Length: 527
Image 1 (tube, helix red, strand yellow):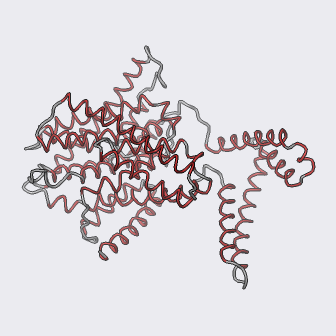
Image 2: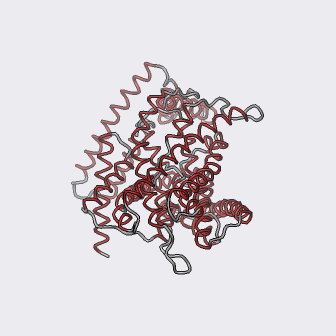
Image 3: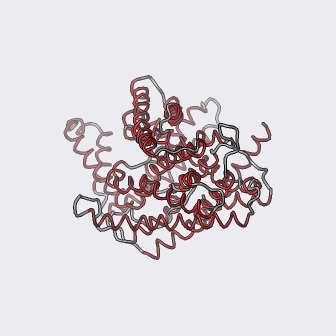
């Protein structure tokens, strides 16, 4: 037990250094982590780390999906709901069909049921990989919204198909109309379960005497409760987490205090980073174990199968994205669409941003070693190896070339959004206008006699004229000097804390207040 604990500590430290390296060379960290894990496994620097297949989905998937749902923009999600839904469900099924047909033809002993199982595993793209790459390039906001929304629901639909394919392989039976009815039932009841549990958590946050620590613990338990309850009743645990997460995130401003939101954001950011880092590193570390278990199949043949499946996946996704653009132009004659002329550049970028990652690995590792009758699960090791190949090749090939593709296409943003800095200044000006109106209507008399309120009024008047170049320059000077002042105040607090009789807890509280002041003064668009 102690050795395993030490191994994971060392692994986390290695992950941190690899992420620093990724930031230094400006490459998305999932790519560096997978390659780093692969190098560690080949050189045997780290011992082979085995994961219990039954726990992989439960440990990693609920919190990662919950965090993604929590940060999803409802406005963008609703605007692009048709595109997101079509790629989240229809394209997953199409991809699974294509992979099932191809794999059953080229891999000896591979049945259509096993092909559907493999197709469901490798069909969902990874949002973490895509967003970490897109963060460093200029791309239309709509594409980011669609990619993130698609991945959120794509994970759910692919794992539902995975479940039915797993049953078909284990039982040897697949009755289409029963599966179709069950598919709808699993989706609908999974969503209902998530919303109902979300309502319970809403009531706890809203009406029970919780504090910030309790709120954070509740948010950490929510995804696991949503997932486990839904899975207990054989509904979609993934859709339960997604729907419950969306339900609660939309109401976060009313159920959580400012302190709970700030602290929970920090906790979840760290947890999300740690879980993603571990999974991407484990992808690389699994290679020796997977290769050793290939059995009679030669490594050369297995690599060939992986290359062919990866090529088929990339081509299928690009054809689907371009085909959806053609279909949108056609259907826009009869219904209102968000964009009736999507063109070909956006769909091509969207198609190329199909890197696979966390969900694919988790699903593949969750395949049981033995079936219910005691027999070994057929082709399990081949499925694991092909999944590893797909993740590695899509991350390295598509991940490294995606920025080049985006720059080559040079797609203009059709929505013409203003820059983050301009939006920041505009919103600050509007808030100042609204605040001044509120003060003048409700506290006009006190404004005449209260010096503190007068200073507050003067600050809002300055913010109101933020778009004026001269005022903006003054504000920039003010921000720079204020940040220097905050640093000086921290130094003074440390010196003050050395004196006898000064309570260290009070000093730490003031340091926390200075941190909050710095958070407010720094621009919102800074990373």
